Image (cartoon, rainbow, N blue to C red; front, side):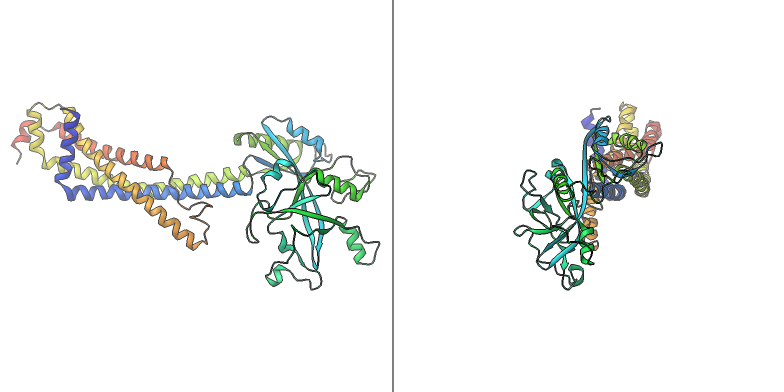
Length: 444
């Protein structure tokens, strides 16, 4: 018997019993959709987590802080010499120091007594999304910086002492068109406010741009101001000359070190699988270091457990559908006993009879799987829309989805549904093969 004949006969047999076939297929539809939707929720949560971590910092990055002790208890300095040691490590692609300094900024009646200035390398500067103006120029005559989009709300009226957190209104500080009086020696400023010593020198500095986003938008570069690290070093050396720079460690005799020490350094690996090896080497030196990969690994283990539990719940529905398929095929055999007997008498091969019934079961699984996939995509859209409304747009938007169905999941579910159909029809097919031809023909 040709394969096309088997296909035609199997589809014809299913079509003759429309209601029974429809109910059996419906069970597969529900089972397939249940598995896909359940697993998609776990995948969506893991995907949203990964997107959030990527937005807050690269998974290739290791954060190293400027406090640590060597194996013999000596103080470790996170300076340029140590950075060279990091660069020599295997699989280290880039080392990006960050020099942090706190200043006071004033413009008109507005003042911020605690502005974080971050000196970063050019490659980091180039990653900052510019909403207005441009990035700082390291070769400019004076220090230029780009202002984080939420930094304006840190300013307050110097006379009233009230700012954004008191009035709900953003102070009218013009960073782009007007310079700001910047005070680097904060200690001298506070002493002069208490009548002790002379007030420190104020420097007129200009912002070159603003980070993209409004006052409520959070991002990696939303807070503080950013400038080129070499420009910040030159400015601090100019302001403090040979005096100790606040925040910088000093030698036992009180004199500053020749090299700048960085509060933090970002070490980038070439591949994510090498991050933990580099992290352990840095920790062995004595520095405190952290990578998002540690957090991701823990969360992925939890996510995998969640996916297994949800998938198991969905699999129960498909198992029930498998029982329905087996029942349908057994009933079909009882109803078609004489037909099976005629086929055997006419010389139909046992393998063809088995294939005929297995194909009918596989078609039930295939049709149910296709419809189940379409239903699961519809349910996924509904879940994301409901979650988006109830969670203020956290899901179902560009930030990720609570339910996400990758193509491989849909294909795997379809294959699983077909396999369930074939397995469920296997025993009925064997029974059909074992029927006695004469007994089958005499059957009423």
